Length: 239
Image (cartoon, rainbow, N blue to C red; front, side, top):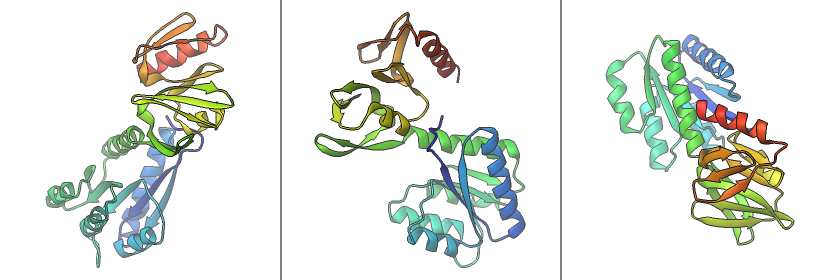
């Protein structure tokens, strides 16, 4: 469900070298099987990770050991939350009693050591699904820069020399090409026609050469694309 330019940026922080390497390896292999491209950076202390974040490093997901010297995982998360940073966090620890403390800083999951592969997979895919749902794109519109939530986009159409994007709360126009917009969006966006890019999440029904959107709009489906569009739609519904 990623575009070609999507890369999940992950930080793994654990002061035990063996555990750190195992977590990094298991995470990479799990996401590889799910065809999710990622870049994983490892840190041997909470201090080192926090310094990296303060230096401008950006991560979408943190896998943190709870008990670390100087700055432990709970303290690090509390500092991030105080700054308004809502990066997804998965705690990994041998100390089960720390689980409730983890949820106090809005941790997505708490995994006990030794890690069970199926538990790690569930936690990772949960975080990916939340990130995808909350994803947004920055669009240069005729009214200035605007950040639009991906899930709010119903469809886009070529409009003059640019594109018109229909969202849940109205439409905006941009000078960017529709192909450039498509490259910014996940795979649930498909071309039903060379002039229309649609979000399959908002398709209410599909029939030969037409599809109905959930806002009541009916869009044309190219007869040359119909078989492919039908296949993509059925695959989307089956996910």
